[in-house]
Length: 99
Image (cartoon, rainbow, N blue to C red; front, side, top):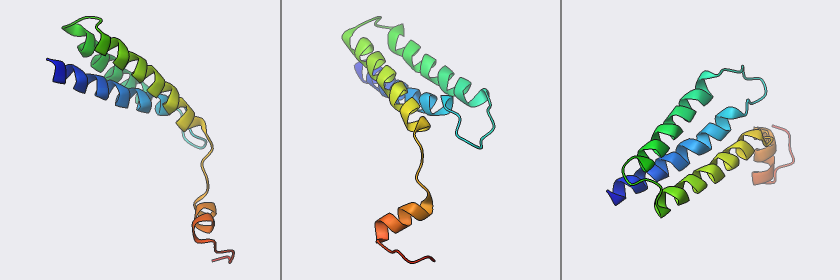
């Protein structure tokens, strides 16, 4: 039972990160409620399965806290500005010429 609970906890962490990224709408993208809702359902099912058999043990609480931190990291990752591809190319190659 322990490996299954560990797998469910890791899945909850993964789903929470993508929930955070889906909650932040990128510029130029149309807002839809479907994408964040599906990630929220996946996260809730994974956390529910984690608590279903054994209740609130140390592993369940630790995975829930890590999922909350992952949600915050996903919100930050979705909200921070992205670099342009041209800017990245110039930074990596050190090329000052225009293509």
